[in-house]
Length: 129
Image 1 (cartoon, rainbow, N blue to C red):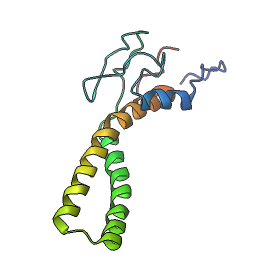
Image 2: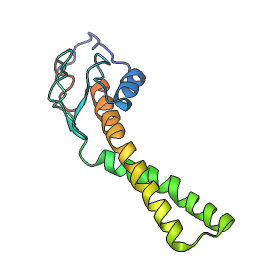
Image 3: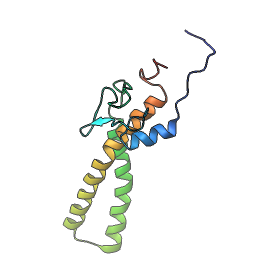
């Protein structure tokens, strides 16, 4: 166990999270983090920061389901009690809304989780100072 007193360079969490939300490299904030829809680049194409250490796994999907459920469930109840639309219309509109919101949130939440891991030096991101 290494007990050195020299501080490790701190990485700012909020700017990293903002870059991750925009799907940009948390180090340089300009390079794209994702190639395709959800695949993370092994390293930033602009600054060369290694991004392959990430362990986002099921976290972004879980957060997406959590957010979409908490937004859509009260909305469905409110729309149904106030407007009383036909059930097929209600199901169609909110199904499309759930899918659209999920597709919007999923890559952004993945970028956010990778950026948090980078800022907190988790899963190998901190090996090179």
